[in-house]
Image (cartoon, rainbow, N blue to C red):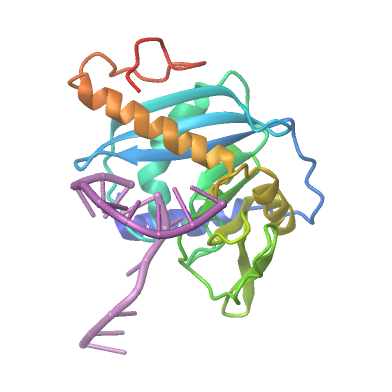
Length: 237
DNA sequence: GCGACAG
DNA sequence: ATCTTGTCGC
């Protein structure tokens, strides 16, 4: 698919995007997503189910394979969604809320990865990014839970949110079927003692570990990925 | 035209 | 994203 076609797809899918008023009913569990790559084009996607009350990992699956779409700012979804969908399909239940490593509405065309994935699956989704992309924001107060609007043009597209006192904020934006206010409170509520909230953090850890396993195994024995539950015994640490 | 640019 | 060592601090 060419970049021009990908942009057309985004503008088309965007008509299906739904952002409700605040008041999202927080589910018992949420799903964190991330993809890690090799210097070449091999990727491992991870989907980790996190218990909202305890922040514990209750299920973890992966999917891996060659990735064809290159990284292009604004078109990240086309690179990551194939493996992410495959990983999500391996979960034992349909997710109630997806949390992506990246942006949703805070995107040049208001349709980043979190919006794209949310619309395709018609599941609530939002994004948590580690670095700025679209929009400007005022300095965020120091205490955990403080935030400042991300403003692009005349729109509020997301928020810079302090998940830990004295630590750089993360960037939160709504993806699909959830309001920014709810994304903001969830980002803080889902954060343990780290800057990155547990869902995305655990997905990052798992995808990196699986990629390392894949490489040390010579890339032959684990080609089918997607093991459910806890990591198998024998895995190096 | 030039620089910036999620992961 | 990935390439990479030590170092400061709780």
